[in-house]
Image 1 (cartoon, rainbow, N blue to C red):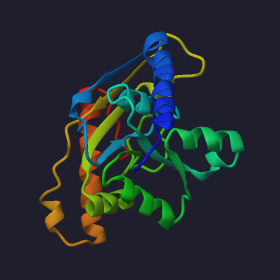
Image 2 (cartoon, rainbow, N blue to C red):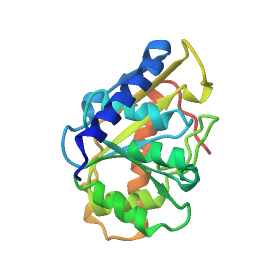
Image 3 (cartoon, one colour):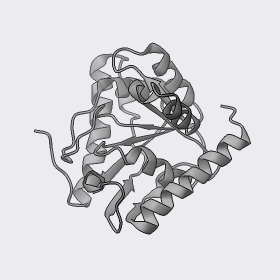
Length: 217
């Protein structure tokens, strides 16, 4: 996707400003960033515990890959105000209706052919840190587009407030998940569920490694 150099400069600059707050004034650490491929379609699939992650994840990724974009679907309510619509849109976010949004789904599929996209498979925020179940629609997206899928775990951000200082938080990027066996199955709902279940299992494994796994069940 063609993106002007001015927009890329703005996104990179914004990411470093946010990163200064996250990692200098606070203690937001990043690990496993080397697991993210430099080129090609990449899906960053993360747990969802705080509003912070929608800006801290781009810092973590763009800090490693300056002048690239990290695209993200976001709830349409964030785009009703003119200022936030322009701001979030400039960073690569685009509105999604929580119901059936065919246009947004098509755009995600198109982006995943070559771009990096951030998604929260749970579909909703869990401020208590509990890992919810994955949305089958994410499994369908993966089946159709076959990007590199990076399981991503966020820890500690649900305890942050703004402004905050010396607060600890972390993002862990896992290795790309292998779906080669599931891609051999039929393009049906059961297959899509198996795919997203594997994504959630990958996130859960990363959270266990940090002693932060809490199951919804």
